[in-house]
Image 1 (cartoon, rainbow, N blue to C red):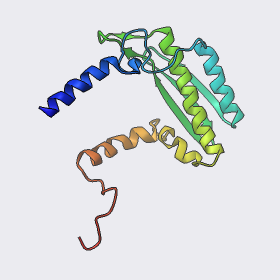
Image 2: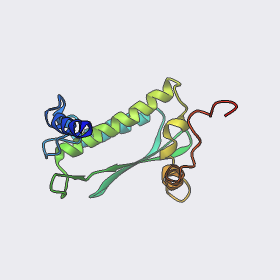
Image 3: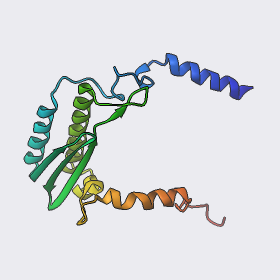
Image 4: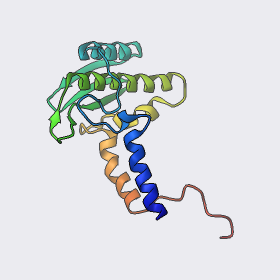
Length: 169
């Protein structure tokens, strides 16, 4: 009975939550990303300027129907960010609103800026910050190489406990 009460309460809270945008998936929302009026071309230019400021070279911006790629070389590494450009609306039909695209590009700029700031502040090394995006000789990223193995290890329960068992146990 208590479980039913909690479930109903959670359902009601989800509809009257103080942050309704977290539950809203209409075309007016952009997956919890803020609205922006900055054109995507300007954001791409800002990304390039940011990377140049940090010493990057050999840029490539590629744009397709479903995703965009940003590729650059920095610290003797080739880095690739893949930016999905499609979203699903409430009817599960792919959409690409201009607002969604502008927000996506702004989010990518913030992501890259945060990683570079973490490296500059010595919170982490360049390799730690960008490892998942490093391109290997076959053109795939480190993430693409390691993700299946990591998923399998966690799915099979092969991970060591976060804390070791008590001594003498």
